[in-house]
Amino acid sequence: MKILNMKRFMKVLNCFITLFVLLSSCSNSTSKKGVITEKSARPNIIYIYTDQQSETMMSCAGNTYLKTPAMDYIATNGIRFTRAYTTNPVCSPARVSLMTGRFPGYFNDKNGEQTRENAGAMKIPEVSENVKSTTIAAYLKKAGYDLVFGGKEHLPPSLSPTALGFVDITNNERDVLAQEAAKYIKKEHEKPYFMVVSLINPHDICYMAIRDFAETEQSKRILQTGKTEIETLDKALELPEGIEQEFFFAEYCPPLPPNFEPQEDEALAIGSLLERRSFRKNARENYTEEQWRMHRWAYARLTEMVDKQIQVILDAVKESGQEENTLIIFSSDHGDNDSSHRMEHKTVLYEESANIPFAAMWKGHIPKGQVDTISLISNGLDLLPTVCDYAGIKGEVDPRGRSLKPLFEGKNIDWRETLAVEGEISRMVVNEDGYKYVRYDAVGMEERLMDLNIDPFETTHFTNDESHSDVLSKLRKSFEEEWFPNL
Image 1 (tube, rainbow, N blue to C red):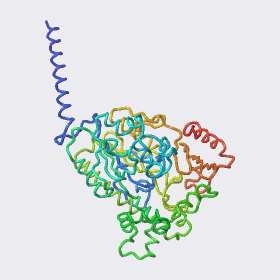
Image 2: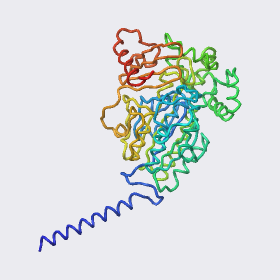
Image 3: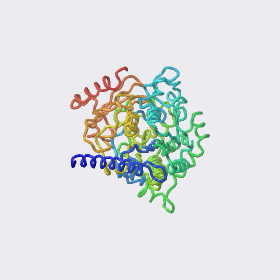
Image 4: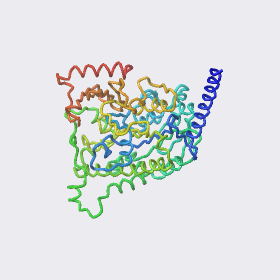
């Protein structure tokens, strides 16, 4: 009899425990605003995407010539990677990767040419059903996420956010975008959401050399349609109030970088590129050192402007009580040469152009204060599998792309040893040991091996150095067999 009573008691106890767990789950999984708060639930995911920002353009990266408290907040409350790279250091190709998880060169333009630069990427025709069903939007929609996009697109029609199923909250790329994103964040949400906030700056720095050397009809058209961009640039070029010019250059303005002069034995392909972009050639040949320093000053101010817009978004997350159920990822499409090698703009595969910021935070889930200086990250290849992993669905596109979730969580795992980047005039492979192999193809085949350990500013190259012959051979093999086998 006692045994039966004990069995009955245990059965009742188990039912009570089950009921308690279910009730606790219901009460803890949704707040009064309908926001998912349970720690084990799938998070809201916000991807903040700036334009033309190099990895070094954050105060948390050690840059003392600007202040970026919003970017720093994401980094210090989670993880920051110092060796993150774009898939292609130009706007439209990089954004194709964002949407598809593929290298831009996976696609051909309407003329059958491989996508390697802006014009070609904008002319990608209708994509296949396989691509449509495996975009970042398709996967997250399948996972039950609401999809939201705001800001700069610069994508071919077949890969535009609306074509892929995003709700477009605004085409504005500046303050209005930040405000609209904040409004959406503060709304009640029945389902988790994936939001892309595509901010334009510090991209307005492009207009400095274009305006100063507007010789071609294309440059003149850009200036005619870029009134807001030029007004913003002019604001960024202003000196601090009450500061005389001499004192400004002595105490405020960033100095020229250590790699201000062109690389020793520079590849002919770079000269060919500058010939095709006459304003870039003119800037290299005609800008004074003070003008280059003013370029650096304005670039820093434009970065601070976009940081303030990011702050609006972070404030909205915090004020709505969603920090503990929101994964925030911050990156950029590519960098800017920022007077290195006497160049501005992007395209070439120097670190300033190809190495980008990448940071992530999710309070309570991603340990804070991490700085990863070794792992090679591709925002174009790795973003899709990463957000899919957090959304509870497996995102499979390019098998060389990997979920960053284990790295975010501080786990010690085997990671890739090499990573590739495509470009208009060259392609490259970098490895975890700080070596970098670039193969140019715009003026015949030219090779350059850089050693970022000895020469982090890429002032010279080690292609013909006998002591580097083994690493050169290994990176050639990686280039030809692992990353670009069909060339």
